[in-house]
Image (tube, rainbow, N blue to C red; front, top):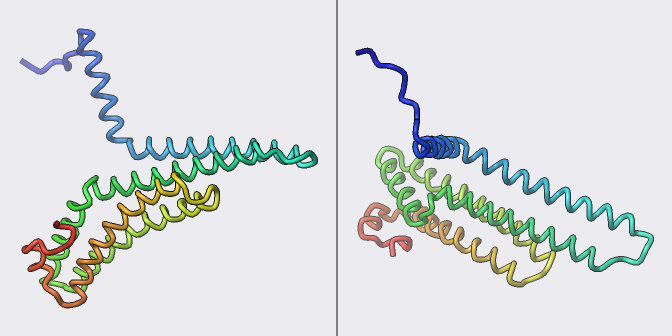
Length: 200
């Protein structure tokens, strides 16, 4: 018997399940685009509100300055810096797939795979990953400095500092591998003996 048309989802439960599956597949396919557009919408909204407040302040330029208005501008800029910091850390966490130790282990394994044939190329692998992770730290530091300029050292500053330290820890672990390789130490032996800091 020749195959007929695919079975239609007849029951309400089957229809709902089909819709959920379709939505899940779409989101998995488009999640990066969806996330990017969400960030763009948020930033556009913040920019619009900041511009509106700035216009309002300019209109009042011939009148006594409103400290509450300046405070609102600072608060919105602060919220934007905090939001961007969280977005940057989320991108970092996605890059290392949510596991710093597993990520550094993978880098070390890739170094060891390449080392016998081309030591210089193996070293460049570690350097490449270190530069990539360092960029996340640089962006976080930039937003942290914005917070420092806006409100000084306080809870918001330390909130971002916690994120910076988590990224820095991964950089130090990668530097440990890179340093061992430069000093002609046996990276493979240290890896097998679990002598690297990230393995403790």
